[in-house]
Length: 169
Ligand code: CO
Image (tube, rainbow, N blue to C red; front, top):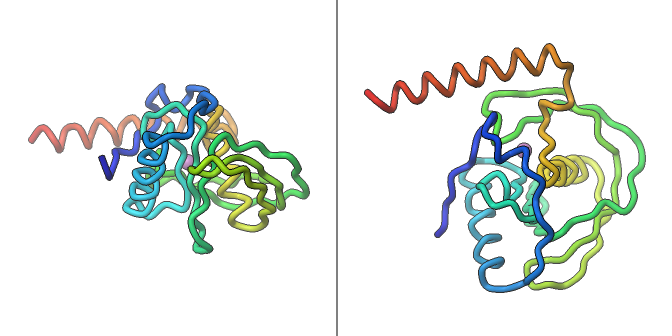
């Protein structure tokens, strides 16, 4: 398949809780390849399968230290707190301050079904937490006040309509 379309907020599928992956097979490998390709093409540093409409617990991250693939990721340990502005491929042009854990230990499988445990800090820890949030339908807009979220949502709806209008011409 290759490049996939990234779904944008407020599409309801982004709120879906992704299912645990039961089978490590060729379909999963292809999904991971497509996700990495889509992430790179979108200049993102992470992508969850749900962002391309697949409700399965698969994430890819690359913060410039190589590609990390995690299937059924679980955060085993988390320490510290850090605040930083974050964006999301589902929310083009939106940046919000998000509090995250400073360091995490995350475990899961790679696309070959091998178990792995990762100790992450800095941007990698942040990106992993962001992508794992997607698997439970949590978005960065949930990390801001209700008023700010409403303003963001109406601005994005308006933008989506304008884009649709441009396409029709
Ligand atoms: Co995101």
